Length: 315
Image (cartoon, rainbow, N blue to C red):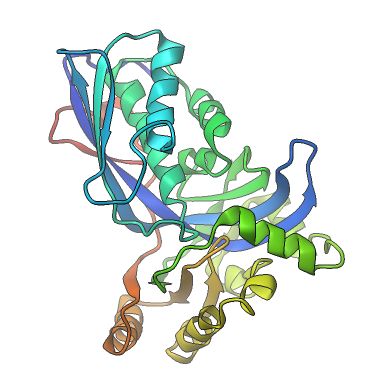
């Protein structure tokens, strides 16, 4: 990344949600994390981050409206901004206004995406020469899903999330996200998975082919979508299985729990099919429902994408 124009003091960055089209949880690593293999893709639901340089003081100030989130080191956005300032040895004031749209603790990667957006936006504002590798490495020190967002829209994620390789997925699809309104804590989900399964299944031949070719079609993906968290979590939350079955009955080509939940999503061929399904789902529920395209926007690595306070960049 080349240095940006330091006369720019503000940027608005869009942070997309993600879904796991396939997630296999393998053995446990020495560092305590689980070894995973996941095919991840962004979807067009975005949090917004307005990042400003404040010449009147030093330090960080994070606000996020009515969202029930910590505003200090308990928030990944705060820690991401703090990391940039520490590594750059910059003594500047930074104001970050976070507008949450992505549901919390929902398996959609909202917190990780927000942190990636913070790393991206603040390094641009400060004119830092961070490469894509620098951003990924910094993100990996903060959270396992963060590096993925620098390789979006589609990537294979391995290890504990630090090994990310961009993948080509041909064709377009629409997705209906259904969030039932309750969170599932990731640590608890992993505990249930570990306690209930007798052995770790090895990766199948299709994942090995993806590793070799890093290119596939939606027709291929539809046939192999799988989430290792479904068997242990669905008995605790039968509503998740009901949502999955409902999406399939409403015409989804495939439906799956995203991450460790609690969001369930369905893949549809067209916008019309997705809209029909979401309309039917909204009639009798208070669930949060989105009918949106699968993400298609690449990261704006070109610094010319950052020009003024009115510029919105995609992360």
